Each structure stands twice: as structure tokens, then as C-alpha cells.
Length: 252
Image (cartoon, one colour):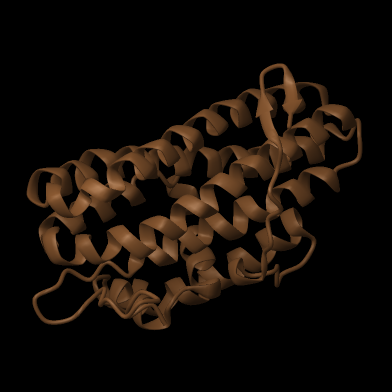
């Protein structure tokens, strides 16, 4: 469950905005991006069809992550800086540095992905897998810091209306044809109580059908991308500390 942080600070309850959905979203990024280097490496050199399929998956999650961080900065981080600058002061340098690192690795990942998509070469796939591993190493550290330090502040100082707008804008980045798949991804390991609250906002027929369709869609998708309908969960992933990746290659 995601009712509180590891140090006991509440993420929902009387007088608080329920921000637990952020952890559900973060776990999706951890799982799907964390498993992506393996999916890339399992793709045989020269297999253009499979390369496009995996590249589309990686590209989708890189785009979703970029959008997530953009609206996070615009809608949440800016509001917190205005309302509780003293509480944020110890975190500003670290969080901004982490965002900058992740943004740079996102740019490198997209460039390397484009190359692999066009060549389907094993060497280009390996280069992409290495950059994705570096991205995940930085991203996982950043997400953990957000969950530990920022979510409790958001619960206290972001309004319910502001959180709802953030959620709507976040969902807008998911292609309409992938909405049921996206919900199935969240259902795979997301907090049932949190997702139940999201379902409660939907019309009754959608509320009944979406979990069924979503789970089925994710099982099919996971078999195609990860080779199993039950891929490892975000809590089971260990991302090794990767060397720094630059435009010129990898340096210690």
C-alpha cells in the first residue's frame, strides 16, 4: 500500500490531498523502462519488424516520462516553490540537478533510439540498452527522492483541484488507442485502493469493463514486449550503476 512514506509521513487523509497515484505512475516508469534494456537486447540484429515494435514501446515511455516531468515542473514544483520555499530550500539543488541529469539522458536515449530504429543493428541496440540503463539508474534515484521528500509536501500544500488538473494533463499524454492498456499497466502492480478511487469517477459501464479489458490488454502487450504476461514488477528490478554516457561514448 502507498498510504505513507517510509518515514511515516501521510500521503492522504483528512486535510490532505490524496497524492498516492504518483507512486502508481512512478512504478509504471520503473517497470517498463527498467525492463526495456532487456527487450532491446533480445531483439535479433536485422529484425526490422521486431525492432520497430520494441522501439515504439521505448519511445512511448520516453515521451510519457518527458511529459510527466514537464507538467510536474509547471503545475506542482512551481506551486510548492511559491508556497513553502523554506521547506523546499534543502531539496532545490538536488531535485533540479536530478531533473537536469534525467533530461539529458532522455535526450540521449531518444537520439540513440532513432539510430537503432533505422538500422536494427545489434551494435546500435547495445548502445541504446546502455543509455537506457544509465537513464534508469538516474531516474530511479530521482523518483525515490520525490516520493520521500516531495509527495508529503504535495499532500499538504497542493489543492485537490490542482492535483486533478495534474492528473488530467498526465492522462492526456497517453494515446487514446492505448488508454485501456495504460490502465491495465497500472492495475498490474498499482495500489488497488488508489485505482479503485480512480475507477469510481468513471461511468458504471466503463467502471465494470475497464479492469477486464485493461488486464487483458496488458497481458497481450507484455507477452509481445517482455516475452511473458507476468513481467517482473518494479520492486523486483535491480538497475546496476552505469557508467556516464556521453555523445562520444561511455566514460568512467
